[in-house]
Each structure stands twice: as C-alpha cells, then as structure tokens.
Image 1 (tube, rainbow, N blue to C red):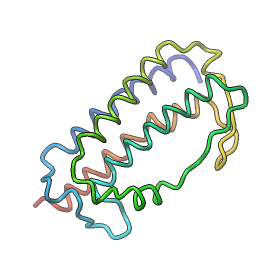
Image 2: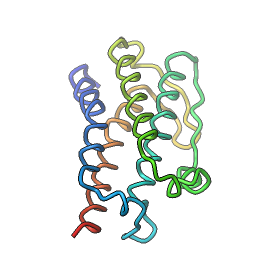
Image 3: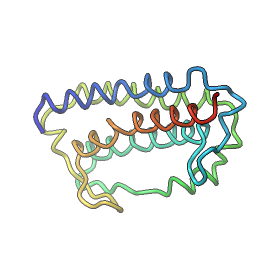
Image 4: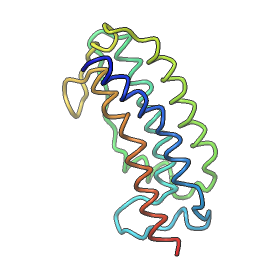
Length: 159
C-alpha cells in the first residue's frame, strides 16, 4: 500500500464518526430499537456494536505495534449484542462517546506511525495473517457500512 492510499484510508476512517452521527440525525428515539428487517440489527444495536468494536479494534492496532507476532483474538459480535443487551440499553450517548473517543485516540496514533509500524504483522484467530495495513482497510470501511445500515433502517421506519 502506498502512503497516498494509506492516507486516503485514514481520512475515511476519520470520517466514520461523522457518517454515523449524520445517519442518526432525525431518527426518532422511539424507533431506534425497531427491527424492520428480520435477523438484522436495530439502529440501537449498531451504535452499541460500534462502541465495542471500536474499542476492540483500538487494542488490536496497539497489540500489532507493541507485540512481536501479536495474537489478535476474534470475537462473536452477535453474542456481544445479545449478552451485553444492546437493544435494552436506550441511552446511546455513552456508546457514541466511546466510539468517538477510541477513533480520535487511534487517529493520533496513526498520524505518528511510520512505514515500519504500518508493516507490522500478527495473527488473527479467524482470518490468519493480519497486518496494521489490513487493520486500516477493515476499519476505514467499518463505520461507513454501519452508517449505511442506519440510513436503510431510518428509511424503512420513518415515513
């Protein structure tokens, strides 16, 4: 990956919080827990997932940078949603704050990384060889994908 490609991904990563917040604008609070698409997450579940995923991803990048041959543990995001009662937790502010703070802290770190840092690798328990650049590819798109989900939910629920 070139420095320019990496910078584009970092910019996309930085924009992720804005995209999610924008998608939530005008979403009635009473509808955040509604499930118009069977088997898919609600807007509330998505926001709580983003907080947990983002804090997990922040640790993953730090492990890659600090540990030689870092082991990156996968996790069951659906089990998190159920066992951590995502849809029973109405206040989104703490999760949005955790999501935002983890991104801001990680952006600071990324801006300090050099080429050798970006070349660091470890092993992901579910997907195998895992690098800092692969991490960036995944998380640069992650919030945008969920913002799109929230927009689809809002479109289905708000008439």
